[in-house]
Image (cartoon, rainbow, N blue to C red; front, side):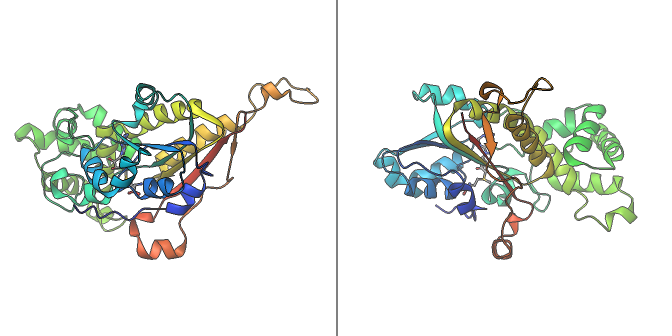
Length: 313
Ligand SMILES: C[S@@+](CC[C@H](N)C(=O)[O-])C[C@H]1O[C@@H](n2cnc3c(N)ncnc32)[C@H](O)[C@@H]1O
């Protein structure tokens, strides 16, 4: 079985976890198993729980990482990582030594035309990472009211023609449902002035990103999961998060900043008591970005940012 995905920031994200060979680790986004494989190669008595909400990724790694399943160092969990705490608890796990998130879709998901993620392939509107989920891009495009469409296009796509695109969607779907990615691309193109279409990449890029984020509730599940991961972390344990777009990165940056800065210290205290000091520290002040060498051989690495946090008490 093929799974053509080149892992981004492989060593940086895994080295950033400072692996304890006997520790309990989580890969929140198994995909093609690149990060999982490297974590597993560093374990002695430790264990890795690997999450993916897409059965295709689990099926592939049942083969690809079979040796680790056989020697009982690896457990697959087919679930959204927003269920991190409850799902780990079902496996008797209440603390972890580290977790990696490599967000977004994998290359096979993106390149598989029938998953409907790409404006470059004609397919039914879909964009569900979890193929059992009910909400797909079709419902968002054909059923969500105008105001809700405008909101997601602005918020998740940072699309300045949000209103005009939402209006165009409304107009077309009154005549007949918008069924395919290429139909949606035409509807978007019609709404963007010709002048603007010549700049800023493909005219459908921001709208497709916005719909994908909405379908999979990508920012909501990330926030929920990170809160749980921070709680589950042992002292010395770390979280590595790789993001691919500015909204996600801002969310991670803000959460990590809140957790690593002093809160509500009364003015004039000469020494901050230990119990008031933050429980976490940033491992790197600035996000880690791919090297030029990585960018040259993996175009998906563009815009990747890695942030790492550690529990210190
Ligand atoms: C970028 S790929 C991960 C690639 C992987 N690190 C590797 O080295 O091959 C992201 C994967 O995470 C999964 N995923 C994204 N969001 C998820 C979520 N909320 N819960 C569970 N899996 C998720 C996707 O289905 C996809 O397979």
